[in-house]
Amino acid sequence: MEEFKDVVLTTRIRLARNIKGFNFPNNMIDKQRLEVLNHIKNNISDEYTILELSNIDEVTKKSLVETHTISKELLLSNNTALIIDEKNNITAMINEEDHFRIQAFEHGFNIDKAYKNITAFDNDISSSVEYAYSEDYGYITACPTCIGTGMRVSVMLHLPALEKIKLLDKIFNEISNLGISIRGIYGENTNGEGCIYQISNQKTLGISEGDIIEQVKQVTQYVVKQERKARELLKSRLEVKDEIMRSYGILKNAIIMNKKEAMTLLSNVRMGINMDIINDIDLEKIDNVIGNIGKNTLRKNLKDYFPREEENTKRAEYIKSNI
Image 1: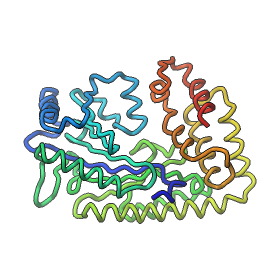
Image 2: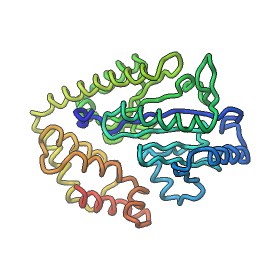
Image 3: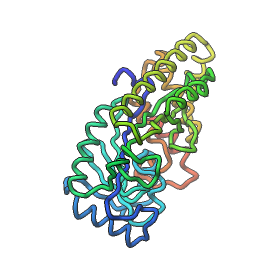
Image 4: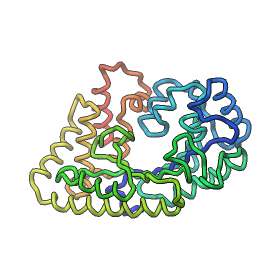
């Protein structure tokens, strides 16, 4: 939903799928992983691009992790790959925890579009390879928490106001009781860098895909409402406005900038835009910067494999030239 873009950054739907007759990836040796990879390559449509991770340079692979395209776990094994459907913003990791980890991405709060696209992709794949499926339990997955639909619906939320007024724990406890999990920007066991958090469904067994989507929609709408209320409370506070404007000034003038500081300052500026405190930069530009300031993503986009000691100056330069 376009009207939620002040709080919702991205929506992702993920499907876990396995091929009938093969062990799960964590129970396979390299030779067996290669058999799965070749089986997929030989059977799926040639309209999709398959990139074997062994053929991708290290900087690009780490950039793919930074931009949430792949998981860091995919880098830990041999004979792994990435299927790309550029037209519909869909990727599928091959031989991660499951044979397929299919992901559909959309900017903002657009669950319905992501679901439509991922369903079409999933149907296409299942017409070429036979999934492991039980009439009693649904899709069979490596992790028991994914059995059933195998579907996770995740929404990335920017919650700076709730964090500033110290209501995040209360909100998170409320939605956790509804069967929704909360993680940091890079998933489980990570923090909410830049006040960005992921919420997603916990339950996949004994619940339909439609019910999962409706549950995540309702919880997202609730959190958005609470964040907006918190922003209204902060709007009249001079110290908040001062912090926002100072953050903007630092971003436009700093010579050195580490990622943690950059995310904090960008979070303040993003909130300032949505509170009508900053009016000379649009939200999309800030969101693009937030997504591109990881070390390896900077290297990839700048086409400059700069040494580690130059990372913070390159980041500052990139931010200044893009806000």
